[in-house]
Length: 214
Image 1: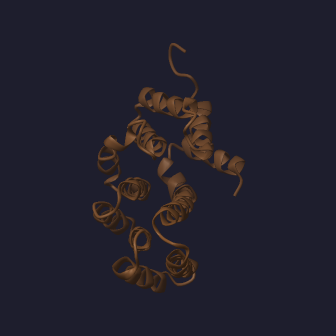
Image 2: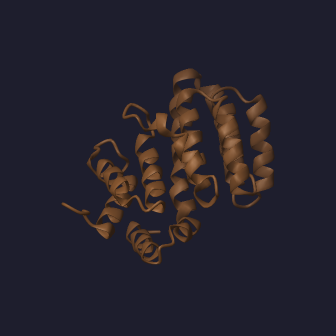
């Protein structure tokens, strides 16, 4: 999917005052970026901690489990759960984080991710909580889950831009557009924000405009 197509869908959803519909359609695309992050963290942490033979064995097993996602999620989840118990670090953590996202219902995924986050190293713990925030977007607990992410919004936390995006969505849903604009503007101006997050924030600012007094 092109970024342009995604932006048009954002506009359509907002015009209909139905951000929930937008997240139903494109939430998987947004959260899909987390899978890339998981793989990237796997390589980074694995490179630091393990020799090539150990990395190759654990990485191959993890990659094979990931390949089953979308084709046989039950089998993928079962394999990942086994790796969560038996694989060397960091692949046990990565397997647990990924398996939690393969549960059937968003509410189950959120609960599993929040439980798993307490057992993970700091970077992956933050990631698990942020993914839980995105997965909760279509549940009644969205605002509660996002409120728990406040500590992760600090500039020194690795996923602070994604937390700000979630906070802006929560503010927009409450019709607090002043707060939402502040958050989107901060994302756009933050050179450390991922490009995709910046683009989505700019799209929302373009639609809503600068606000009163601007």
